[in-house]
Amino acid sequence: MPARRTVGFCVAVGPCGQPRPDCGPVQPIAQGPVHGFTLVELLVAITVLAAVAVMGLRGLDALTRARDTLGIELEEARRIQLTFAQLQADCANIVDPALLPGRAPLVITANSLVLVRSVRLDGQPTKLKIVAYHLASGTLARRESAATRDLGMLDAAWTDVARPDAQAQDVTLQRDVARMRIRTWQGRLQGWRSPGTDVVSADSGNPAAASGFPAGLEVSLQLRRSRGNMTKVFLLGNL
Image (cartoon, rainbow, N blue to C red; front, side, top):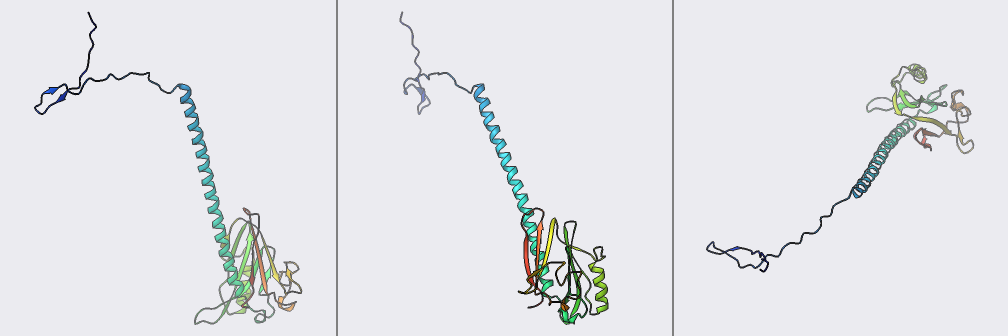
């Protein structure tokens, strides 16, 4: 007796709803072996993904550190610009030594700068005030006295403002300052002079009575985070 063979048909539905076998036999689908990942392949994939994740975290950490460092450097640069701008305004308005007989309008020490400057307000006479810059414990600060036209009050203000422990309120200009260097320009014959040998140093007398009042001032600041110095030269008076 011959073996029976089962043939499948695709049954289609006609217009009247009656099924009809008109689409021919259905070919059987071959069932092949099913492949998957082995345990070794999974372990290799997990290891690669873990390495990529670690490298990504390190890159993100480096990017965050660089951003923080850049922010600190930008803030330091902004403060330096403000400090130099304030110094330029004070140096441009320094008092002519001829207007202060027997007094020094500029005194420089290793870590401080004290000067007398004029203050001009609209509709008011010109007044004088003492301005002091001092470096202590890595902080550069500025203090000033009240403006006055009385030379006696000006002398008292000088004594009060120039002291390291002055009661005047300080305005912090720059932090983390490692060193401050100040020099004055005495002309081509004498060149740059430093505190101690300068005619306007604290241990000298009236600078106007010596070899002439300096024409320029050089201030160099070295920050603890920076290797180089930030230097700027200022003209003394409205030249």
